[in-house]
Length: 163
Image (cartoon, rainbow, N blue to C red; front, side, top):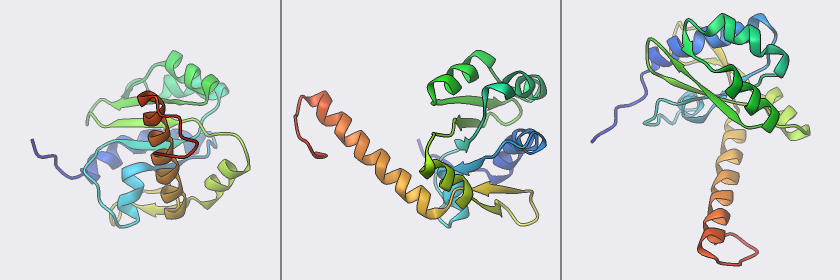
């Protein structure tokens, strides 16, 4: 079955309520993944959206403000924050899944946030902050290497380098 390209208007519709709440509470964020790739000139065939940022103190307010617009689970968010992992929201009107990644600690992650640039997904649309192209390439490479190392361990291979 053929996949259709990312629906930009649905992505904007799905992101806007979340980002407006982030802006209202001063929660730093950037959008990565396939959505940011499209801003940097490489359109991809996916509808997932990746957003980075959030703290435990924001959970109750975030859920209260967004529960009419998204499927959102406070316990999942708390767990993601405590484990420095991710959670997702499902936009009710569009069905677009928004993956929210809790920002990692350390100077590199802080620099990633600083390098994020404001841009638009479509002419005349609301601006959002997007991961820099360099950070997206770095993340893709590190994920690829980690995936290959995991595959080697699963196969029982004991290489000190990626397979």
